[in-house]
Image (tube, rainbow, N blue to C red; front, side):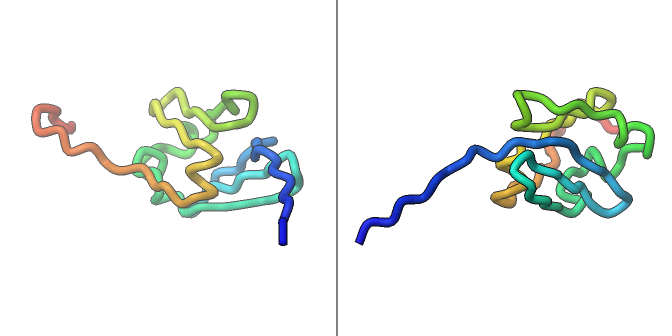
Length: 93
């Protein structure tokens, strides 16, 4: 038996960032969400910083310029939370 699956590359239409989650609205009509804590930068950012985002790569990701954070739609779909860097030479204020 041969199964044919039409694969449409997921692309973002827009997102919404709440206190608890990142909600992605895809061009194919799907809506997905991930916990905000998946991005430590976003979870520690101000509301104003969270709302200042741009869709990048023809809908393949989101960039927050104020906090230098990027999240791909694939990362959201496949469960890839951002990991905090443990750079011992960098001091945190």
